[in-house]
Length: 419
Ligand SMILES: Cc1cc2nc3c(=O)[nH]c(=O)nc-3n(C[C@H](O)[C@H](O)[C@H](O)COP(=O)(O)OP(=O)(O)OC[C@H]3O[C@@H](n4cnc5c(N)ncnc54)[C@H](O)[C@@H]3O)c2cc1C
Image (cartoon, rainbow, N blue to C red; front, side, top):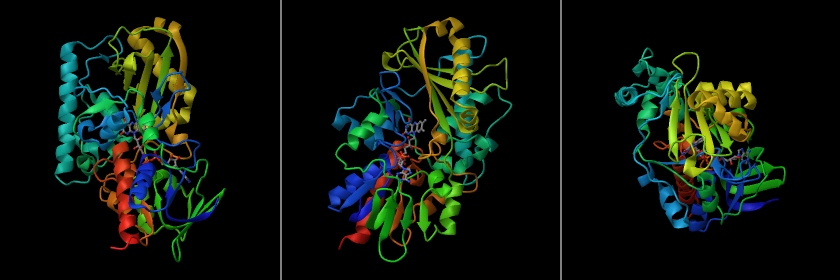
């Protein structure tokens, strides 16, 4: 494979596919180079493992009413479940389900904790989220779990100022056929060279040259959409190397951990309405981490545990079997061990161990909330980073990645096209 194009796009996740679609609008020639044998990146709907769709990565249309991918879902006929802002009413405390007063108390404290974090970040202080949290609260482990799920890092490693910049309308609508399926449909018309990892990007002199095992591509500019951890790891060699400021920014906005453990049952063992949510915080054992579960999404006989941050990283290192044991023990405590008689199949994700993502989503560390803007700076007018980590207010989401891809192409077009 070789050739000359206007734009070489590295990665066919949401950012890369959006960048390609926009390049087509401008009439710019482009190539999309993807290391994996599929498109979608961290938006990946798995239909093989259980014979029914479940999302290994992204699942919810965040800020759904104003999310551009909600409109895409409407256009492409991909259904989603509109639901009210989530209030947890199924909270298991290790020995019993929390009663209504306990749920209200937990929800009120969760709201207060988020308000305190937002006020801290809103004051302009670039300090850890943990400074606004009360570690002695009865509900601290759940609050910590939710922060780890949102930011993929523990509260002491999340910048309160960065989190304050995140825009959240409060609507989180799950896609019934999967978010991966939506992104795949969005990218269906985009030609992508699969199994084509970019090993090297040479950007001295005129244009850029991208070396892959299938040949070299010459382009006038490159849009690089891989995660900050992939870039920081040096898996893609830059010649000359990335400037020191860019290296620092990649390390200041690392990709953290988030994973799922999915269980398939032969019948309904939960007795909860379809698409329920449940949380687990074992008050008997403070060393046990809190977890949250999707229960029977869209009436499927599945339960899907979500874990994030340091805990997800530790569990990835412990391995898939340990992840499954941990989440299965929580399910047995919540719903009784007899449910395990009806367990058919299990699966666990390992986004940190995936060499093409090396994590789940990126978070600015305390003191580094300004570093996303460094990531967004083009290099020599030829290399433009895109992807969720680069978006100023919708980082860590599919829509942020999508919009960053469009923005990168528009900036390339401004520098390449005659005015
Ligand atoms: C468990 C989990 C749950 C999530 N839940 C949600 C959610 O509910 N809602 C939401 O909005 N977001 C969610 N996210 C985040 C969302 O999935 C990501 O923010 C988004 O998909 C990132 O898109 P991207 O294009 O920036 O990166 P990616 O999707 O990572 O795309 C980059 C692409 O580059 C490819 N690549 C890597 N190296 C190379 C190379 N050398 N050469 C060529 N190609 C390469 C990768 O294979 C990948 O396909 C979740 C993520 C995870 C992991």
